[in-house]
Amino acid sequence: MCRTKQPWMASSGWESSASLPTRAGVALASTGNKNTGTYVGAWNQLVPVDSRLCTKKRGIVERCGRQRANQQWHCSVQENPRVLQSSSMDETYDILANQLLSRALITETGQKYMVGIAGSPGAGKSTVAKEVAARLNVLWLEKQGEKSGDIEASPTEIAVAVPMDGFHLYRRQLDAMEDPVEAHARRGAHWTFDPASLVKNLQQLRSQGWAHLPSFDHGVGDPVEKDIYVSPMHRVVVVEGNYLLMEEGEWTGLADLFDERWYVDIDIDEAMKRVERRHVSTGKTPDYAKQRVVYNDRPNAELIALTKRNADLIIPSISVR
Image (cartoon, rainbow, N blue to C red; front, top):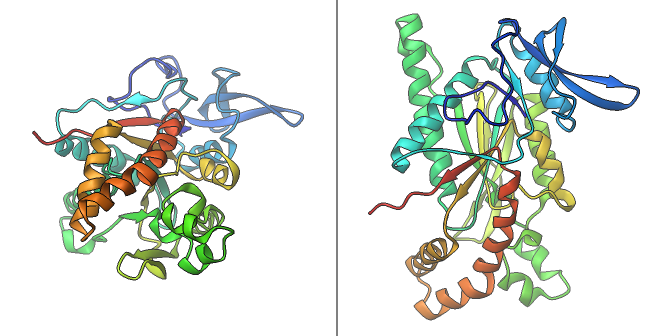
C-alpha cells in the first residue's frame, strides 16, 4: 500500500526517508513484465528503496504518486499489520478521523480515498465507520472554515460510510439455491453475498467519482437498490463489511480497490454475546438467538478472523466498562 507515514504506525516495516528528497512520489520499476521494486523520490527523479516492496499494488502506487508531487509517500508491504494504540473507542474515532483528514486534504474533488473496514459480527465495524466519517466531516468543516473564514462556503460532507449489507443476495436468489432452507439459515455467510457486484460498484465509484449504491432493508430482508448516493464531493469513502479482507474467489477483486484496509479486532466470545443481545433486541427469543449464534454467526466470525492478517491496521474494539 502507498500512504504517508503516520505517528501511530510503528517504525518497523516502514522505510526511512531522512536522506530522501522532500518532494516525493512513488512508482514501480519494471523489467520486462515483472515488477521489481519501488522507488521514492520526485516523480521524475526516482530513488530505489527495496525490490521486495509493492509488487502487487501498482495501480494504487501510481495513483498515489500522481496525487501530489510535493507529498512524501512511503510504500511498504507489511509482514504484520500495525495495531492502533488507544485507551477508548472515542479516542480511536478521533485518531482515525484525524489521520483521514490528511488524506482528504490531498485528494481532489471527484477522486476517492477508499478505506475498507472488516471484522466479525458484533465487532463494531458499523459504529467505527459512521463515527470516523462523521468526525472527519466536522474536522473538514473546521479546517476549511479556518482557511476561508466562511464555514458555510465549504462542502458539509466530504466523507461517507457505506455498509456492505446492500450486497446481500436477495431472498429469491437464496430460494433458487440447491438447499434454500440452509441458504436462509446461513444468511450472512460469505456465500450469501454478491462480491462480484460489490467489486463492480466500487470500481465504478473509483473510476467515475460517484455512484448510487444499495442499502439493506432489515424489515423487508432485501437490498434496496441505489439508496446510497456517493457524490463527487465525497473524498473519503469508508466501506464496512464482514468479508472485505477476504482474498478468495470473487472477493479477491476488493484488495486493490482500497487505499487502506482496517480490521476491528474483538474477542469472538465477546462479539457473540453482543450478537446474541442484538438478535433478542429485534424480537427473537433467547433460545433462537443462541442457536443462531452457534449455527451461523460464530462460524462466520471464525472465518473472518483468518482475514485479519490482510489488514494494514488493527483496531482493538474496546468495551465500555
